[in-house]
Amino acid sequence: MYFNDVHILYYVLIGIIGLLVGQFIDWCNKRLPEGKKVFSKEIAKEYKETFKPNYLLMFVTSFIYIMLLYHCGLQQGIIENLDLIQYLILTPLLLSVMIIDHKKQIIPNRLVLTIFEIGLLFAFIYGISDINIAMTKILGMVVGAGIFLIITLSGGLIYEKDSMGFGDIKLIGALGLYFGSSSIITISIMSFLIGAIVSIFLIIIRKRKVNEYIAFGTFIALSSFISMFVPFGTILIILLKIFTLGLYKA
Image (cartoon, rainbow, N blue to C red; front, side, top):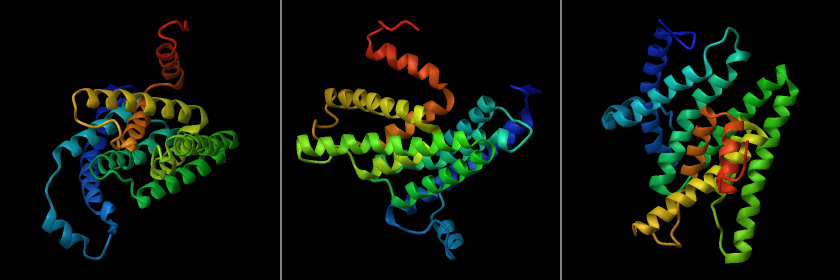
């Protein structure tokens, strides 16, 4: 049986891998905020003592993996599968960003650096087949970090305090290496739009105050997931319709 020209056994295999990765994410989320090593000599002993299955995270990761396989398909060569491979690797990193930033209001430097290092590697691999793709990804890093840096500096001048953390700036810059210049702009816009909607809702139901910190990394990660599955053109049209109050005609 095939789905999107991919045999069902591949979906079963990627689903099982997703379950294992999801549990590993839970382990990382406990250690990264404390600055502890994810891999150490005592990892087996520590993991055995503290092991507790996180079924929600396991099944969410597995579901995303299966959907990525369905969305991207499975091609013959490695180069043709680069989008799928990079998104499979990026998924657990984004989930860690969402969870840690939501719980701890921080994005660990080690986590962001890992996203950056892997993104740089993929940009290099893409460049082997097409230098223009690599340049677009490098430009995405500059554009993403530039947009958030300008907003942060502007907020500092106007409100005399940082409007967002530098962890968010580093994160969006690193993600630019995966999505390129065009998509990182839409991801930035979606992040602010989703963040604004959620913030207004929480203020209305009195779950947060107007000047209270909001975990913006969560919205960046969520917008990144949307960009994995929804084509750039579709996202752009939706955003244009939103900001023109439906007046824009595609």
